[in-house]
Image 1 (cartoon, rainbow, N blue to C red):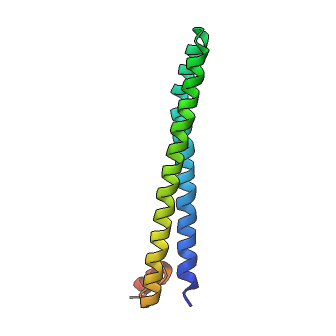
Image 2 (tube, rainbow, N blue to C red; image 1 turned 180 degrees about the vertical axis):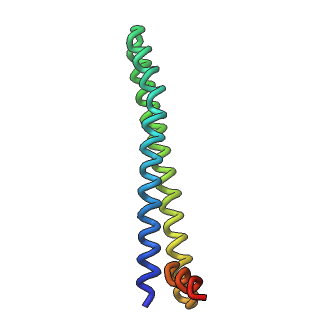
Image 3 (cartoon, rainbow, N blue to C red; image 1 turned 45 degrees about the vertical axis):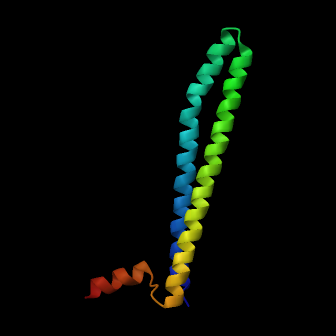
Length: 106
């Protein structure tokens, strides 16, 4: 009976996922530049082992960041869907478009 509210929530969650993914991609891309520069400088200076270690350190840091952001996003989504479920079971969940239409009529 509350399919429209669920559809609105799914669309909102979809755009939040897209925005978070783009933000993570941009963050990893821009933060990888200094590590890559350090690796290139160290490799050209003849210390290739340290350059490799810089790349490995960057990969570890980025993997930890991706896991943390993914965990935060999953927690947010579960909380949002749970709160919506509570509103649906209480009978207080109304689609945003219906509320906006009701305001315009009055």
